[in-house]
Image 1 (cartoon, helix red, strand yellow):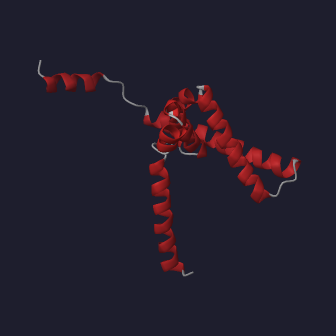
Image 2 (cartoon, helix red, strand yellow):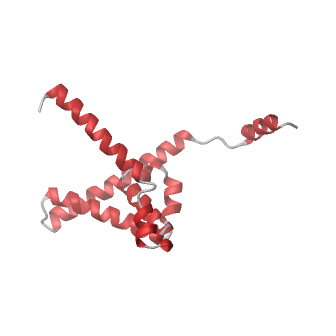
Image 3 (cartoon, rainbow, N blue to C red):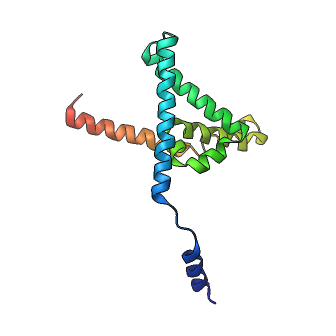
Length: 146
């Protein structure tokens, strides 16, 4: 059996990804992260009398903290691989990427390990986020003025 025929057989027998199932799972998990974020904002504003603008910042801090903590404890990786985009797209995915890179390179030291490699996974997200912000800012300026 030649290599091409073997690869064709393997592709035919591999399980097909359930795209609709994965999309619904990501929608539900991502929506749950949004609900948790809104509940945190409500707790901060109603029970702790924090202004809503500050409560938004505190909510992000809490979500990033717990995503980083759960990544360091080792069970967030399994949840991310199950939930996929539902946890990668929100701010929890960014925190997970940063913490994972930090944990992976901590043996090499603070400067050459963590400092050099912390943005390996999430650096492209920051780069393209900044570029997109500039591009859309220029488009908005050209269309609607200052």
